[in-house]
Length: 179
Length: 194
Image (cartoon, rainbow over all chains, first blue to last red; front, top):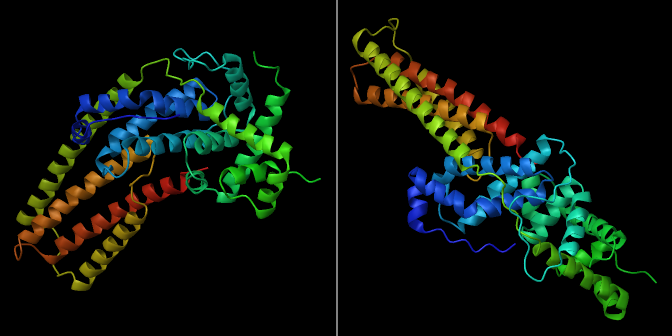
């Protein structure tokens, strides 16, 4: 998912001073990408909302430590990824089938059926495999960064990615032809 | 004929494929098609619809922030008051037993404090994520340490007017609080990650 989020330096400076309106502006700017990241890693919409809330509490607490190095979204995304991975660690996720988030919206030209198959296949992956696939292939994290966030080795991240893709391949092969 | 495995395809996509895999790919239509499928699948993953939260969580975030700020202000006010009272007691009543604490004791407490600062720096909060309860506890301890630092500074400025054992006592209190803070941070740091 490409994020082209621009938050003005003035808003960031006001947020760093604790201004609640500026903090809300940050929340509004990053609410959807943070939720989407969490929702793709976690199976459950409620858990993803919790991660969204925890992420912004952390943003409010730590915004003064953000030195402006790198894109703000990269900093927020790192917090969100860690929160989502901690959630996986803390809780045994409930297996649910939820494809009806309130505000989902498809992109023009994308087959809904094909998306559904891929989403179902993603749901079949292990929590860790799913997180590695999303963080690496979509969010663009390196294996080194993923290994650090998960407190695992680079080899672990690489093997999880290959294993998960092999599983996705099998699952999609087995799925009915998309129309 | 041996074909590429998914490990090979993932490595090839990252330009990290083995010499064997790269050579094999050149002459194998099936493996080239499989690699292309991998590229397509990743493109499809990136094109999945963006999901938005069903509920607005900002109000919950805002409420927690306001509550935390109010609590911190109350605690800060309480500690400032306690620190001021402590300083006044030291300056006016000089409650400590006669006998001058040795410079060694002061140096020892300061060394212990510096060592804990160093440990704390190692587990510093930059880029780290912590639980709400750990953050709250750490914030309380930091406030208490700041209050003690204030007293130490004032004692330092009142050079000659206070006894050395008063200063040692404050440094020891600082070391005690620092130890608790390190414990909170280290426990939290070891918990982060899968």
